[in-house]
Image (cartoon, rainbow, N blue to C red; front, side, top):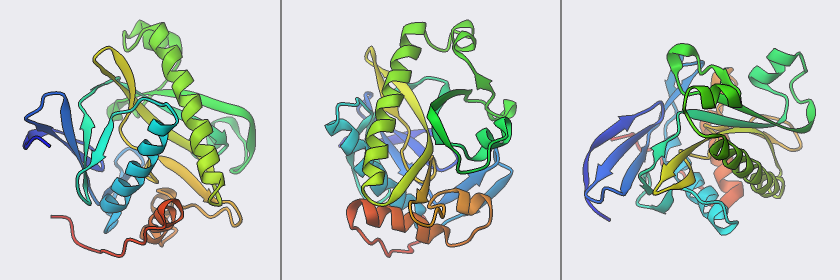
Length: 245
């Protein structure tokens, strides 16, 4: 791997570093935790390591299933090497079961299974509280072409199918998830991360959250929930409580 050169960007839970290879970057997963558009902040010791391992598993699975993504390989416990994409400035949320903001907006009780997956687009802008977009907003703002939006929606549906099947096999319900996409040498790639920070995972038997909602709603045992997801996916029991450097 080329050496890390400089910090490109720092987000809620990750840092992105440039390398000597202009086509590659290194993602560093942090323990910092943010919810409610930055109004609630905290730290989950070991989360960065757990999410890095979960993302390695998820992106490897998606690659095997034919979903093009930015992941190249995991470098160490907290870092992964990725393709340096140009992030498309909206997120995509796929919802299988009503929860969170969707439940509040449409008046359904948390846990209501939807007749079909709901796909939402949100502008990547915290000052505007990640405003909800439709396709005409996206094209009017020149964020992506109609063809790119169609491809992103198709890829998001495929990711949902793959992740739903995977999680069902380990006794976890995929309630919803948020993903990002980027452009790389003329290709649309799935980017960012797939982890309990960006997905709602509920235990299939107890319906207990195994994700960031434990932090959002002060449910406790946040670190244990993340570790449980990793353990069910990989059998890896990560016990390190090493402080972030």
